[in-house]
Length: 207
Image 1 (tube, one colour):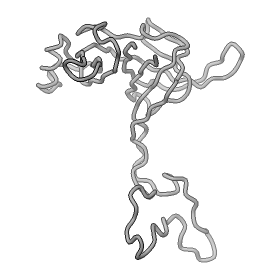
Image 2 (tube, one colour):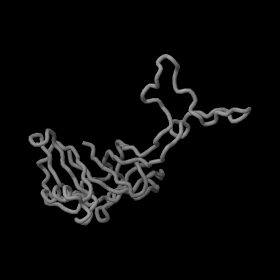
Image 3 (cartoon, helix red, strand yellow):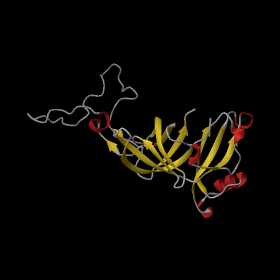
Image 4 (cartoon, one colour):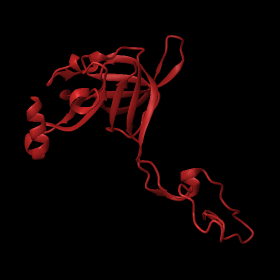
């Protein structure tokens, strides 16, 4: 299984297929990615390749980050992520990873952080129904009862209530790559992807 790469979400638009069907697509600008560590069953207990991305000046990195990258022969990358692979020996430290590894029609899993929407109530967060708006009702968007009294005498964990909405790690499975631009390092993927513009996405090929 080949490794993937990391990229930035540029935005969405629509294109038309050969049959004239309008397809929603997302543009991804691939980051400069470099292999910074190779993990094997003997050394780490599993096979994986670590990839560093988002180039930064060296003075903006912490000493542990700079030391780790220097040991692998790479430098100036702020973040790292890894891809599990059955053949880690097929890669070497410092190797560049580009969009050449992908092709049109390929299926990939894409992971990213969803848009954070702050503290939200039951109606917005869980699609609860509201209370009556007339006849003196004072329960419009209140949560109402959250459990019984003496038994069980507590609120069960996982109760749907108001709280943080969004800002979670989301994976869109089986996304289809419709076009690859090697000259501009751009991938065009069918459908919507997590996060807002400039969000970092992890693109993992499916074997």
